[in-house]
Length: 172
Image 1: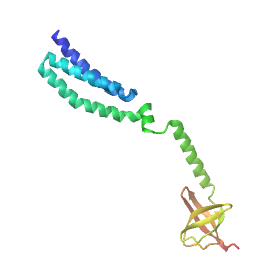
Image 2: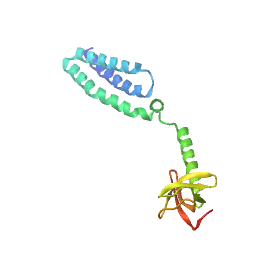
Image 3: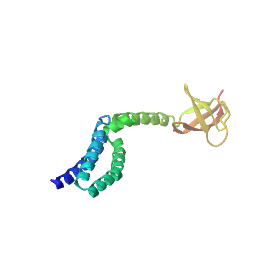
Image 4: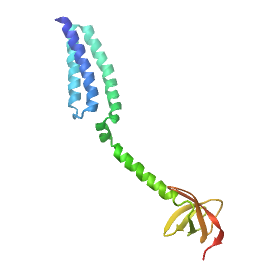
């Protein structure tokens, strides 16, 4: 009968640790965590009923390993579906949509490469240029460019469009 208290105490502490990990995966509003603590306390009491040395060992084990298991479970939380929703990380579909949007923007800017336009303001080295109906903020490569000078796009990325002056300088 006495050894059964030892096994019961060790088992309850182990169940408490397991429930702490389960709490990270199953949204229960803390109910599983409370049950885990109750299991650990009941296990410590059972170990004290078996023998004081076992009770102290169980209590120290729970006090040391309990927080470690808890923080391990918390570190696993972002990898769970519930954790991703709780933290607000985007789903796979949202990531795919975001990547598609970013690719469309990059393609839009790549289409600007080689276009010719007119510097609307002096490019010292940053200013504005018009390409068709659109105005963009641009960066002049190779020196200052006066307003009214024809320019062509040499490089285009989001937030950076580089232009150079076209050899035949002024447009009226």
